[in-house]
Structures are given as C-alpha cells and as structure tokens.
Image (tube, rainbow, N blue to C red; front, side, top):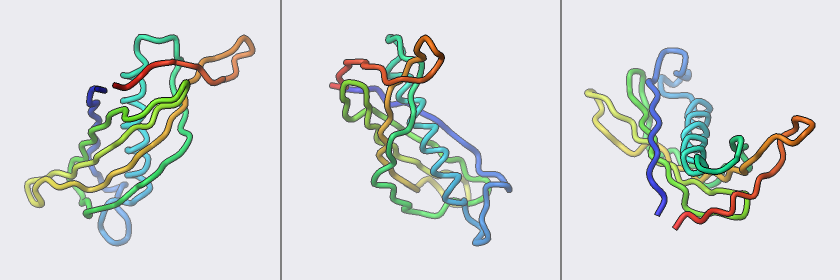
Length: 131
C-alpha cells in the first residue's frame, strides 16, 4: 500500500476570488503540487528525474475555502503503469472559524521522466507497483 504524502498551503489575500472564497485555479495548482510530492516520494529510490502532469480527473469542489484557512492535502498513489502514476488527493480546509472539512478531491495522472543525452525530458519506466 502506498504511503500518504502531505502538502499544505495557507489561503492568503491573493488567492481569493470575487466571491470571497479560494479561486479554483489556486486549488488546482495546489492539488497538482500535492500530487507531485506524492509521486516524488513514491519514485525516491528510482532514477526518475521527476514527473509531469498527464491528466487531472474527477476534480470535485465540495466546500468553500476562505481567507485564513489552511488547505491540507493528503495524497497517495492508487494505480501505476510502466511509467505512469495515478494519485488520489483529498484537500481538507481548516480554520478556527469554519472547522475542518473536505474541500476538494481529485485524481491526477503523472508520468515519470528523465533527461536524455540532449537534455530533453523523456518517459521513464519506473516499473513499480503501488500495492
């Protein structure tokens, strides 16, 4: 079973939309970063240089997130291919005013990469299993 990776962000003024809540684009960026963290943790013992985002699936905004909330992401690898990793991410918002709640969920697919002799990123077959 894949371990859970954690990633957090504090919602600040520049993250707020005209409705007074977290701009969805910021949440998407944070989900992507949380997924990259989980992927890098998973690939730590390989020769992979890192990962690139292939697809964002099943993104669901569940609860509003407000200025001053912490967004705490929990991510884990749930499926692997020869070079790909599908990561499930749960983003919890938390503050004294609004408590803790599940704010957003997503599944993101990444592809492991290395740099070739010309310095270009190319697919890397990690051949790891998440189970």
